[in-house]
Image 1: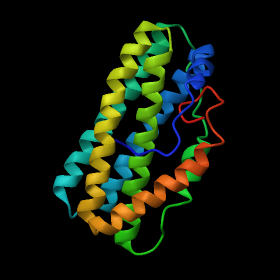
Image 2: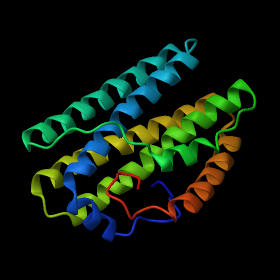
Image 3: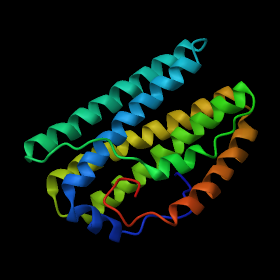
Length: 192
């Protein structure tokens, strides 16, 4: 569905499972950042009330996910740590075109879609490879949500830009992301 060029090595789930406390804290902050990103997109698109409504729903859903992860952290007696720097997301952000307003908005939608696609793929890897039954169920539910967010962001990009141009740009994003992700998958973080 996502056409990601390089799948996550399933052994990453073993790394993640060895330090569930760290993966959960990192995941919680990823959800908070996703909510913040959706709100940032809202500020760029006030003239599109239907898109604003959808982005508000995504922001609320991401905050709900943040809350769910936070509750799991508390229930398990883990310490909720400070926000983590997400090198993967920061590297992706460097690829955003700073051209016309339309190009910038479309690229920010594709940036969001890429993060959702990779997150969904990582949640699938967790679901298929960890032993923790509670987290298997939890990540399966989130995987579905992330796939829906991916579809929404790609759809907005095609709605706001020339669909053919957007499809070509998405192919460029896929190539760029494939080069980045080669150096990840060895840390107990969602994108690490």
